[in-house]
Length: 554
Image (cartoon, rainbow, N blue to C red; front, side, top):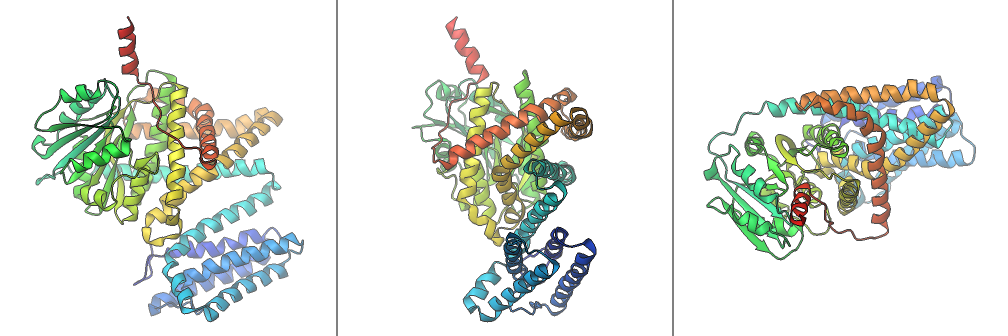
């Protein structure tokens, strides 16, 4: 990435492209050859400014404002003027040119007449400029371009937006995830001196699981003399505490406290532990033998890493629903985490397996009680503190919900917590000092949570209408090719993860059926989150506990 020397990072390519993005929209009202002239002029002007800046080492923009701020301020003015002119039905090459002049003049006026405090405030946010501008310009271009080519049908807009999302996934997310996967697998094993590792296991009504979880931790290859396990029973109403107590030893400590929620149990465990590396593991999960070593290797490889996300895999795959979730973790959740890991900005370290430097965890003040997805919230706080967060190859096996009711409750909690966390940390969108969290991860999740439902509804309705109107043509030219592409990329990820090829036939149901269920759950969660409905943790039925109850009943 090209950076201006001696200044906060600004992506030159983003700035240049952002200005260029203005001009495709002009084809709505003028011939293409007319827009080519100002487009070339704008490109030359931008690169002239950049070249001047790089040669002088100063602002070089000639407008009394840093170059990115000049672009940031001029773009909204230009679009506002264009929309006002369009509303009056007076769009023409002359009016568009006038809008550009007004935009430039407005920026110059701000630079000339604005107070020193205003200029300083804008300059302090120049790192925001390129990225927010890029996203806004790209969205504007897509909307205007699609409106032009599809006669502004909302359903066609939705279908096109869906294709854009798919293209981003196929051409950006998957390649980055593949590269990051290869990089992570090439990491050497941890070397002496080994850091001390504290594994915290919060447990609430985990009878039948917590014992296996503790045993899997003790069975890892990490040196036992550098390991401590802290189990915190958070006021369980079953035999969780008694089951955990059976594993007490010099390595394993078991504590009981009144019920206060998962965040409370994790903070309690943090106070009772002393390791340099803190690993949090859900009580219904099991580690593989090399999991802890893989986590520690990540921290040893990069001193800037503050947190590590584990590689979550579904263990129970006996039914259709659990197999679909296994595909979701492989193709969706873990793939996106790997892509964000390439930027060092994984936005969520999962509760099933997450690792932290104690310094980073304490610097972020531990877990907060104000969201129901404490793992998402804490990860954002760690990133805001300046640490990087990466995805690890450290695998953890977890039990997925095996009924639609339980899956719905789980995803309601996930999506509600995501809304809470995004709203809590919304300032990240405007804070360029938070690095790649601001540039990539946070905007992605904002779009994922708040915009995806709109795109999904329009896309599904648009495809359904197309199928009804031209069933054979739509199926042959749209649906089947999309399913084929999805299957090929699923095959890539399955092979990359050394997973069973028996999952591949379920990709069709995952794309047509399961994804729609998830999007519907997201819509419900959004609606309920914004009507101030408080969400509390609910009980999810577990297979081992149901088997035990059935045996007791006999």
